[in-house]
Length: 420
Image 1 (cartoon, rainbow, N blue to C red):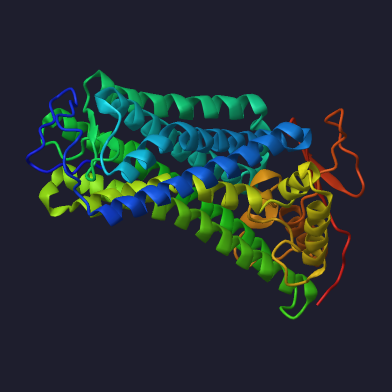
Image 2 (tube, helix red, strand yellow; image 1 turned 180 degrees about the vertical axis):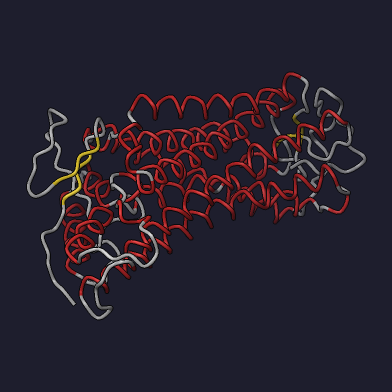
């Protein structure tokens, strides 16, 4: 966010009049910010490069839903490569190094890939809503539909990022004069209109979509776990409760990562536009932008690394045999641990990726189904096992399966009949 002091003149073309101005933060603050940006760039590059490499090597992971994850990794990887180096080197130098053209480029790149990540996260949440809450619509999310949704998200991100270059608002130095973004503090009507529009369509709408989607996903699983006739002391009831708790924690992680990364940036930018920008110190104007850029290291952890299928595919490409064996051994111990979060299925990612929602989720209040029916329907949310042939998309059945058309996803239903 650009909370530029009054002695710096920024024209309508975002001209930088004093790239060698004295630092607006103390030297140690610049060094800390620069070092943190270097760390963000390194981790963001490494994590997202690993994600893309694993998806490239593992054909069975390239499902329609995982196309959204791949798109998210591409946007975060691009941010780390193209947007981070300019700001980090300028921070370590305590001044902007790359002139007006470099400022526009850095602002456009960061803004473009940042918005692309936001729209990708929105698509992921909606996909999980459809697959879990509206199972009859799940098969309709084919690779073609997923690709179209991704294309629309990238187009919207490009549109919002390019219009400041065309005259609807403009790009300029941010508060610390070591990075660039939209000039939020301008009181010109054209700039205020852009800021308000961006706040609605690039923050309020995505947040609303995620809240709506994840709320209904959680309530669907919660209803399934509590509408059966199982006694709460039974194994099935205890397992269902663990699944419900894991889903709650996963949703909290997803929502928290997004809100912590982007809310400060959105709020400070809005205040700079409609309030008094002099109330925002250079440090307060700089930290939210750094938090937003840090999202590139959280997304791979939350949306990919918690997926058991991805982890197994990652182990296969680890070049060190000793490290691979240690990872596989740890995975096996986690699978045997009854209290392990992965033991009861990968609710955090696989529910959204592969599961089919139970039809009993929306039963009328007071109605009950048989224990066997509840056991099977909950397993459809809980247990996800894909056994894809390496050369084809054919699924090798091992037990009862439910296949979502054109998605290559198999849900194995455990034959268990414990009663209370």
